[in-house]
Image 1 (cartoon, rainbow, N blue to C red):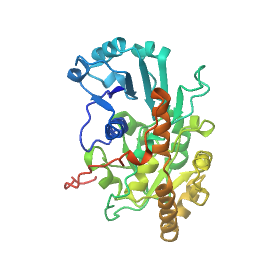
Image 2 (cartoon, helix red, strand yellow; image 1 turned 30 degrees about the vertical axis):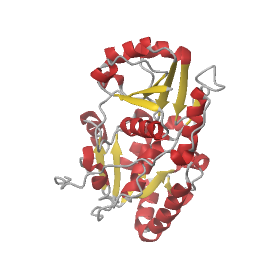
Image 3 (spheres, rainbow, N blue to C red; image 1 turned 120 degrees about the horizontal axis):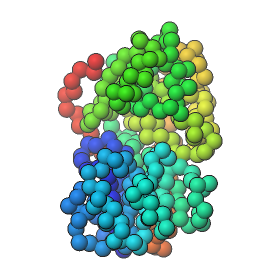
Length: 335
C-alpha cells in the first residue's frame, strides 16, 4: 500500500507541536517496514501527481493550514481509505473534509465509541501522547521552586485554575500562557502570577528549570477516557515533581499508574507536597520512570491500528523509537 500522511503545518526539526511528532513517528514506522509513505505538509507535496491507497490525516488546526485548498482536492481525488489521527478530543474533523467520514478510520488517543455508529473495526485506540516522552533528555539544574503551569486557558479547566491560581498565599506561581488572550485570563486570577515564555525549541530546557508542576485535566475527561495529556510526558521529560488535581485519578487508574500520593484538592495540600518534595520526588521519579519503561502500548496500538486498514501485521520491534532533536542553545532570560 501507498500511504500519504497529511499534516496541516510544516514539519521542522525541534518542533514541539504534537501533530508534527505524530506525523514523523508514523512516517518512520511505515518506511522502516518497507511501506511507501509520504509526508504531505505543504502545497507542493499536496499537488504531486500521486495516487494513495490510504490518506492518514493528523489532527490539527485547519485554519492555520496554508494549503487547505490542495488538501481538500487531494482527499476528493483519493477516495479509498481515510484515517483520522486524533490525540486531542477538542480538535474536530474540519467541516470542509466532512465527506471523508463515509470511509473513515479513527486512530485516536481518546474514547469516541459513543460518537460514531459504525464502531466495529473503524476505531482503534493509540496513545499518541507517549511519543512526547524523552527519557534521554538531560534536565537542567533547577532554579525555581513554587508551582509551574503552562498552556491554554481552557474554559473546561477554569474551575481548577480558580482553585489553585486565585488568591495565592503560600507559594510562588509561574505560568507560561499559550497566547496573549490566555495570559489576560490568567492575570485576572491573581496579580502575583509570574509569567514566563517557554515556546519553541528551548521548551524542555525552560520548563526543566522548575521543581514542581501542576497537572489538571478537562472536566470532559473525568468520565470519558483520554490518554494522559502531552503535559504529563513533558513534565516527566523535564524532571518536574508532578502535583495532580485529584479529579485526574480515574484517568491514571485506567492508565495503570497510581498517583494517589501526589494528588491535591486545595492550595493547602499543594503547599504540603512542595514542603515534602525532597522525600516525595525521588520516589515519584523512580516509580513513574519504571512504569514508562515497561509501557509498550504505543507500538502495540499502532500495529493493531495499521492492521485494521491493510490486514497485515508488522513486527513491533521493527518500529523505531522516536528520536528527538532538542536544542541546547543558550536561551534568553526567562523573565
